[in-house]
Amino acid sequence: MAQKILDQGRTQGTISQEYDDDESISHLPRCQVDASWVKDSAFVGGGCVFDIEPGIHTYGSFGIDQVLFPLHAEFNILLCAMKTALQLGFSTMSFESDCLQLVKLINDEEDWPIVASERNEFDHLHTLFIDFSISFIARKHNVRADLLAKGARSQKSLFSHVNSVIPSWLASNANLFVLN
Image (cartoon, rainbow, N blue to C red; front, side, top):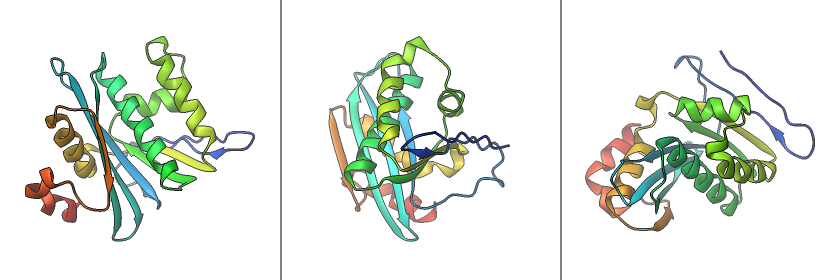
């Protein structure tokens, strides 16, 4: 099942939900995102993997201040990934998240007061893309972003790291980046 919304105006955007692994066909460039949140931590970790072309990747990891709920973390890391995509010069991007609640929230354009500030920032960033999509992917297909997110949270600091090289603190998991 896929749902699409085309924006009227400057941005031609598609927001979709994918429920069946077999139906999900990724388009390049794409960015897989994930957040790592635990209740009693001072920081949230975030990870994103930009697949630019086959075999060409850029990895992003972020340490941000703790937020109230996991949904806030997922939304904030999506915003970090959107900003990074724009800074890298991409005006077209297919984002993928294993947080179905986030994808549904964006797709359904529901008014959730608890994430109003994140939604406002999303709406602004979304207008800066010529072509934008967000879809749900199974957790098993989001391993690289998950590892980056957990590794970022374990750094226990505020930071942003974007590079074509896997962060040194994930060197022991490098083989998982090749396999996924």
